Image (cartoon, rainbow, N blue to C red; front, top):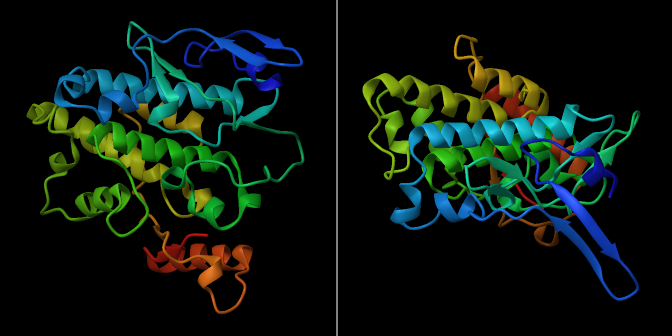
Length: 279
């Protein structure tokens, strides 16, 4: 309830009131007639075409502003922990409202991170997949990066070699491939003069999904990157591929997630992409 009261922002779903008695516990929010972003980017062609290029950019920026407010706009740090298109709502004017605060966590000064793994696997940062104690602001940044790439492409991310993140990285890394291939066919092709915008947006997404948390930008930096095209962007490092098939129950010995996570992250930092088993 504290998070709901603190998170008043144009890009955060507005909390109106609540009912709390012995039989019912009800939270009342403003109504978003257009529903979720998910229903548009993963919907049929008639819904996808409503999200033209400029509108998608505005939606991405709105999400970034909303999450940045949770991280830096109030007296306490609020982690969303389950950012994804399903939890991004749209009003009549296509304005973004970040929603679903059932998984938020408040971080107080001196706390290293939140406890208990919560969220949706395809949007979880690799360090959080391996160790729920490693939850930080950079986990939300990772989820934002996945959401950005999904909003551009109209494709769902997954865990494994065929993930959207891996596909986006392949297009980015190979100069012989057309970056336009990532764009949702309902929007493509873009006019030539807009292709640099697409490339920059993909670059921002890849910066957000880098394997090392420290390599990812803060959400305030992401907002600046999206707002100011004159800002120079760092080249992204290769993302980490997460394999969901390997689980602790299948291991010959118990897995020390903290050790595995640190080793994998250090290996990638020095050598590039690596396969990473999920919990």
